[in-house]
Image 1 (cartoon, rainbow, N blue to C red):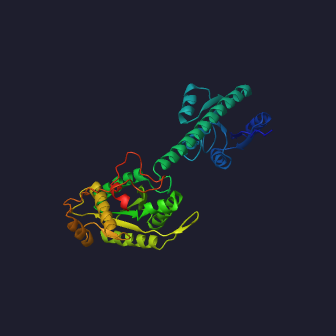
Image 2: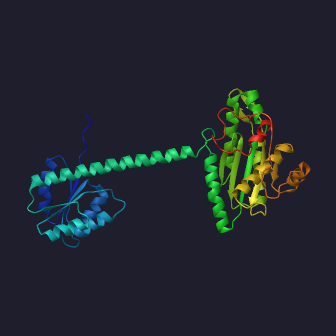
Image 3: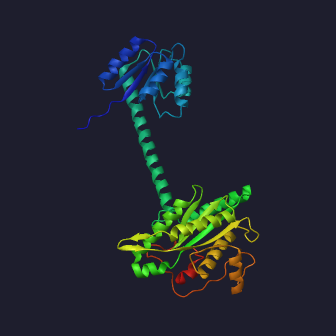
Amino acid sequence: MERKEKKRILVVDDHEDNVELLRARLEARGYEVFGANDGQAALDQVEHVLPDLILLDVMMPKMDGMEVVRRLKANPNLPFIPVIMQTALDSTENKVEGLDAGADDYITKPINFAELEARVNSLLRIKKLQSDLAARESELSDLNDKLRRISLTDGLTDIDNRRSLEDRLHEMWQHSVRLHEPIALIMCDIDKFKSVNDNFGHQAGDAVLKEVAQLLKSEAREIDRVGRYGGEEFLLILPGTVLDAAVTFAERLREKVDAHTFTYTGGTLMRTISCGVAASPHPRVKDQEALLRAADDALYVAKETGRNRVVRFDGAEYNAHTESKGNESSNGETRVKQAAGSGGTSASSGPPSGSKDPAAGRRASA
């Protein structure tokens, strides 16, 4: 049978005889008792032994019991420690002063031990209830944090999901506008991903998605956000980044994926990514939706012009292609993209239910 842990009681009195008398009576009831003969010694003992309850004399030299209890209750690093004030002063004013200072109960000298024991037991029950409640609140807080992380994390790749990306983009866009700082987006899409599922199976497709996510994550700064925007498409949010720097970074990502050998159960394969890059400030990017559309448009051009490349919104390659298609937009809005068939993503890799996917139209031929 597991032994019950003894409750620790600190007895504070400037008369050693009183301390020893209470020690003997309380130890006989199974408590572990510590003593202190002045206020400062009491505060030091609290830090050292962290008692479950304190019996505190009011009338002491140097620092009286009122000041001790005030300091104890004002210390945010201490848990709830019940304090019973003990004094020969029996006036209502003295009791009110002690309770106002933070004491939890009051007993007068000479002490009736049966009464003291009842008060000690009562306060220890209250302490246990408070400790249990605090533990449950902590567990609930941890569970809520875990559920929030799950709600904002893509289950397959363990990076931000679309909901999280949209939340972070809103926050970072507002920050960018407020402080007049640049912000850039990189939209990446795995080239010919449908053929991975068709030729190697969905488990191979899942493996490619996971490894691409980690490759992108490993290259990003701590302040950047990397997430799966939907299917085989990834979005990187780069605060404080101008367009040229974002294009350079996207090229580094493309090269890293191009040189990577993807491993799955049963073999290996190679794949590339295409990237579209957009940034603000830009005369054709008026809000965060326009910024997102601009990056998506640039990605569309990268796919249309051969894949495994980086295209910047409103760059020479982008403009030449859109002019040749007769679809150049004057405000950065996405053209209508039509393609036959449904997207070729892994069975576990679809975008969140009910979300608008700007890339859905191009995936059949990606």
